[in-house]
View 1: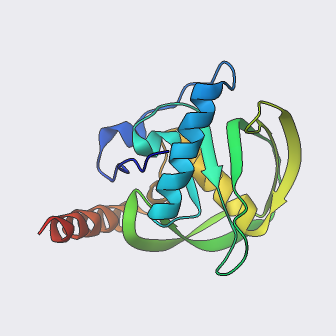
View 2: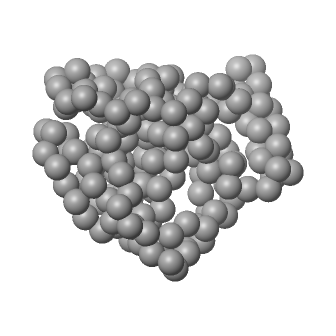
View 3: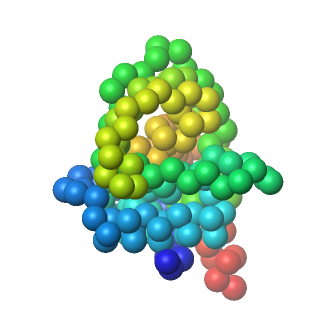
Length: 171
């Protein structure tokens, strides 16, 4: 397992639509293992493959907090089958938009289908932070960042702030 570099805005790869995975193979699992190690090192709670430059429909996530045991989850070719009408606001951040947070409203509950780490199909409902995070990560698969849900002014401010953060980190 390796920690891979995370792409940040305005990298054009982040706007690319990811392609489906034909089958969950050892290569797919190695990618997910690298993604999980990268996400933990960042640290973050979710990561889409495109964020490390791999345009495949793969997501990893771990919503465990603080001292809770790690609870990694793996999503291959995830799809949202149904969304609630009720919206829930959440202050989101993103490893590809470092040190910037803003409120985004998303469906409070979604029903999703995906393949797990072993290629087994799963269908389930997600709500709360899980619903927010899976929708955020699935946006990445479509080339959409959470800042794309904001006004143009707020989005431009976010990109400026990220450029400054990245400049400061390289000093």
